[in-house]
Structures are given as structure tokens and as C-alpha cells.
Image 1 (spheres, rainbow, N blue to C red):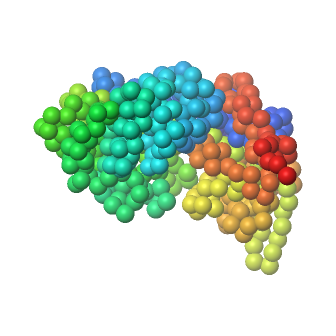
Image 2 (cartoon, rainbow, N blue to C red):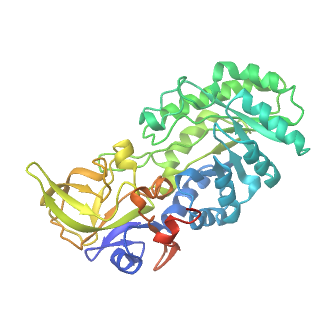
Image 3 (cartoon, rainbow, N blue to C red):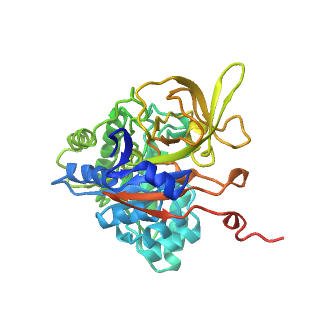
Length: 412
């Protein structure tokens, strides 16, 4: 939904320069249409199959984004009590929430049980013990799925790969059947499904299909053991094209392949997409502060930094950088860096750019996922504003922080 119109970058029908001037920079901008189109691609591709699309809140937890998806009928995959709180505040249906994560606290479990969430994706036998104890105190029955680790390589960045035996996530799939069997001794939990998530930013979805096959084989074994398994949760992880050389999978093609792998089993199928829904829907607007030249290279210093978007520093990830006014020729090779006192504070290295000058605006593309949610106040920098665009209208959905926000809650 980002395109040039008469040489000026637009989000849907809004000129990005208008937002940059009025809302200031750095500023995240999201396209409502892009978010909803991606969600509908997932939902529509499952037509005729019992399913639930549980948006992965960790990708972008802004209330306006969650509300947009809740009104479209989305479920939600959460990994903390704070994410559950956000979903409920945004109008999400707790009965369409699944709770994942390796370190759920007793308080978070109790909050989720009282809220009436659909299911817990448990990641250890110790967690089953805690879930049963908390549910017992509340006189409730907790539905759970065991997250299994199928030892499938997602072929992605090691920090976001989660499906190998040496990762902290889930339990070894070879041990799962015995753990399900032992769960019968707990009075306040009930096995309802099996879950699996092997990683993120997956551009070849064949590893997801391989993992799905292993999960379905386990489900058959559990059903033979007398468990009433009603769903499989196959996680998320579908990647997006961060640069022109990338070829992102089509959502419809992926779901069609998944449906073929699952066959005609009437299990409810859950998937937990995050990045593929919000990633392409967001950009980070920034303004050029200075041009600087060293003996070996040139720098473009901008007002956005690693505290606003840490992905390039943390993952060495690539984000396309676009001028708000279309420039047909690239005449500059430079590092795009921010004001933070770290050599690792960069948004791009050795990047071809137009001949930008002080005061020009740039757009950091594909920043809708794992952008603002990973932002910090490092170097005591206030966090950026967020804007949601719908058609020809836009509104600030999160105010820019000020200096007083930086010290809220502190005492001398």
C-alpha cells in the first residue's frame, strides 16, 4: 500500500510528507488496508476448513492495530500477561486467545484463566504442573496443548529459529506422548491439542510442512491413547520480502500446501502469523540531520536510531530506504546512521541512496513488525509516534513520548 503518486510516496491515499511534517519524525506509519488484506488472505484461504487465525501480538502490539484485527474477527497469540491486557483493551475476544511462551508466571496464568482464554500452549512438564496448581486454586479446568519441538531447521536467522533440539522452546517430540500420558494425573488441566512453531522469517515453507507432518503423526498416536485432541496449532513464521532479491511466499499458496498436508482431518487448524500480516504494512519515517564524510566512507545521519528500529543492529537485517520524493538516480553510497552513541547504531550500511540533503525525509520500509515493539529509551530518547492510515485519512494512534515520560515512575 506504499507507492509513488506523481513522484511522492503515499500510504494508501495519504502523502507521507504530510504525515512527516504534521506528526514529526521519527514516526511509524501503518496501512490499515495492508493489515486487513493480509489477514483476509489467511482467513479466506482456509475456507471450508475449521480454523482460527491467531495474530502473533509480539510482532506489533499497538492497540489500534489489535483493534483493527479484533473487529475483523482475528484470534490472538500472546506470550505475556501484558499482551493479554492489550488484547482485552483493544476489544479482542478472550475465547479466541492462545497463550504461548516458555516462562509464564503464576500471576499471568491466573489472569488468563480468569479472562477465559481458549488454550495454553505449554512448553514444559513443569509448566503443566504450575498450570494445574493455579487452575485448581481457581476451581477451573485449563485446556492445554503441548508445544513440541520437531527438530526441524527453519533455515532462518539463528536468533529467530525455534525448532531445533538445542533451543529453549517446547519439548522434544519424542518425549511428548509420555508427557501427555502423565498429564492425566492432573485434575484441573485437559489436553486439547498439539502446538508447534519452528521459527520466524521463513521464505521456504517446506520446513513448516515437514513439522506439520510430524505433529499430525503425534496427534494420531494421542488419539489412539484416548485423548480428545480437537486442534493443531502450527505456529506462524511466514517471511516477507525485506529487499528486492527476496521472494516472499504467497499466503494463499502456503495455506493450500498446508491444507493438502493436513488432508480431510476435521481438527481445527490454528496458525499464528505476525510478521506477514503487519511487516509490509509499516514504515518508519525519519529526517536527515547531517551528511558526514570520513576518509573511507560517507554517512547520512538521521533522527531515527537503533532505539527506534533495532533490527539492522540486532539481526543485520535489511530494510529498503526510500526518499519521500522519488529520485530516479542513486548517486550516493553511504551508511545511514542514527544519533545513538554506539558504532552499532545503523539502519543501513554501504547503501545506494539518492543525493539526500539536510531536512529531507526518508522512509524505512517493511518496519511494521518487530519495530516499535522492540523500541527502547536508550540514550534517554523518547519513543516515536505511531500513525494509522485508512484510505485518505490518518490519525496518530500513539503520541510521541516527551521528556517527562522518560522519568515517569522514578524517584530520587
